[in-house]
Structures are given as structure tokens and as C-alpha cells.
Length: 289
Image (cartoon, rainbow, N blue to C red; front, side, top):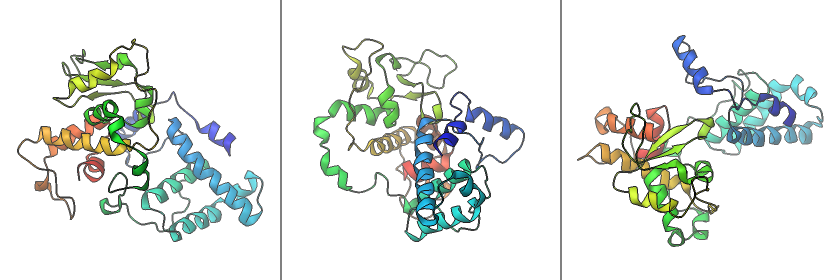
């Protein structure tokens, strides 16, 4: 299975460009797939589920060769996914499991008869409420890191790769939507994408402070606590960006069906750009509400 995953890697190929080509050709792109894996993070996520599946097939049916599993992929993947549904796994986990197995067996019709719950805003639990790991992290010990996260909303992997030279007092690109603003340059974000992140207005000095005393090539954060809930600060940044671009308005209601009049679409689009997402519904569901 690891060899098969190796063969699916396409780190130097842009999934975004391929999706854009498909969009221009009037193809459906919401569930777009190139049939390849374009980032290490996706690889590790898919690998976890693929390995769990083949171990399950070995233990449940004595199958020790991938070729034998290939012959029964339809029935085995359906049974495996149904078992995860019966265990009460979240809709998000189930969709990732399905995507991983469809990828490694190169068949997007697998598990089509297994009914999985819909992903809804009310079922999102990530970075919401008190978690067990919170007691292992004291934010008072990490003020610079937390202030930086609140002002930039970077992901954990983006933090790890950040160098001092990537923090710019002014975006020099006149074609950029953030021209002249303080920004952080991300060279290898989610899906291997580059993006320019606007610093939250009024918090520039907190961002510049983390590069003090560092050479251009130095990594900014040599240690990131494993119990730090990075996503919670990314969400806080998103909401601050929204409120900045929607003066006089409050955040959309946290519950109930969201109506068009309940939110400022232009402000939500600004959050979408800042976070490096392509879909405004993702931002509304996961970050602003």
C-alpha cells in the first residue's frame, strides 16, 4: 500500500491549475480530483486510513496481498466504511476515509451505497468549547506566538516553515490585493499552494516583533507546542478580519439557517482570500459562525 501511495504522489503538479482547466471546460469541479496526491499532509492523512483498511482486511479476512484486496475492493471498502459509520465517526472523518480509499483503488464509485451523514455546521467540534488537551497548554507562556497567530491566522505547518524574510512590512507587488500592506508570504501552504496573508490591521508590530534578532533565512518558530490549538486562533483571526471589513455589523448568528441578509458577503470574501480558501461557504461554516 505504501508503494501504491508513492506512485500517486504529484507534489510538483498543481491541483489548483488542473481544477481551473476543468472549470474553464465547464466540468463539475466541486468534487474535483486529479487522481493524484499533491501535498505531504494529504499523503499522511490518506496513508493513515489506507493502512487501517488493509490491516482490517488482513485481520478480518486473512488477506495478506494487496492484489487479493483489489479483487474485492467494492465489497470490502463498503463494509469497512459502514463499520466506521456504525461506530459513530463524524461526517468529516467518514468523507476523508471514503476519499482516501477511492484514491488508492482508483475508483470513485466505491462505497456509493453507504449512506454517511451530511456535514453540517452544527456537527463541527474542532476548536469549539473546552477540550481535554487545553489543560496541558498555558497561553501565558507563549505570548509572542499567540499574538502572531491572532494577527495572521497561519496553519501549524505554515508556522513551522516560516522564515524571518517571509514577514514583509509592505507587499511590494502592485498587482496584489494587499499591495502596500504588511503581509506574510507562505510558500508551501495547504496543497502546496503559495499565498500572501494580510496582517490584521493594527497588529503589525506584534507580527514584526517575532523576527527581531533573526537572520533572513532563520526559522521564526523553532518550537510549536503540540497542545496549542492553532486552529482556534486561525478562527479568531478570520472573525477579526470579517468584522474589520464589515464595520457596524456583528458576526452572523451562530445557529439556525443562514440567510443572505445575515452576513456581509464582501467581508466574508475577504476572509476567504486571507485564509487561502476558494469557497465562501467553508469560511461561513467553519470560521465566521
